[in-house]
Length: 431
Image: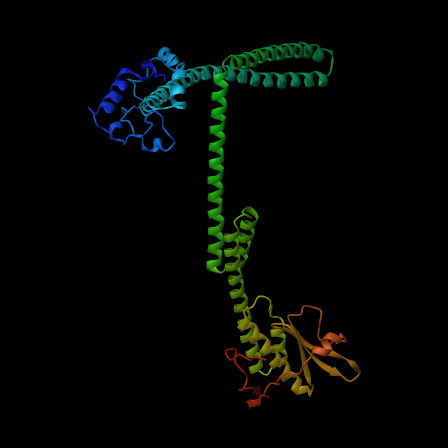
């Protein structure tokens, strides 16, 4: 069985291995501590788990004492495992496997260090060449800018020649156009020469192209990072604007900020849901406040005996988006006001309520026995104005009577009528 060449392993490392094997230096348990087997020269797969770990010297990949100069580095990279080491690893014994693995590890350490050194020196050389390439590109860009300026002057001279009036003016303009054209041609040649020179330099120095691609990738990564940071700042600013508007109860501004956030950040589903819920609560609070004001105004109208104004005020309430309690209060107060008005006319009312807080109050017209007329409507839009004849069988079948309001006893004081029994806005009326 072949041995690993000592040149691959090093005298110092071989000496340490023999010291461990002979028991003179017990950094790790020696091979003699392992129980002998019947066939000690051939290892089975389970034997590798019992093989002791050699105490190899600590090696730093950046230790300058280990890293040779460039010529030695190239020589170190040319060292590959020999047939002897491959044979040892294919048919190992305990001693030979330990030495072969240590040799391979030592070789890998030196090879990785060599590659790092070659990469460092190549990058240093490419950096110098890149500076030269940038100079060539800068020269080309300067001549290209001057070429654009010369073309603009030439075009202006052509325009002057076309607009020249008289023989003398045209005679003076023609040489100017010719001179401008010669200048354009000269700058074209110079710019092309510098461009060709920079392209040729890049072709002769492939490492410069690699460095250029690397820097471009870094610039793109920096741009992406900045774009992400700007988007994050925008995200926080829009969210803060929406939250502040909601906190202050400015519904219009809160709605605008919410729609802006939803348009710019559609992927932020959880934040969109949170803002929408807070906006809905804000809008509901504003609608409830407006409805309560209408209830107060209607109560004042009833107290004055102006029942028609009270009904009209409640009819104009936007019942969409109200909280359930306020919606029931408005609906109940509206039915109560309609009932009081009908009592003065001796009419019997029925109601049709297709949804929470919305409905129609109707009464029978003797002239139209197959229909009902609209007395008042709440939250039904313009489809059911007062006095409209309703013949829809769905409405007629579902129309129901409701509890009449208690009549108010009027009292008079110095000629003015008031209704002390009129309900206040704080007393809800539910139907």
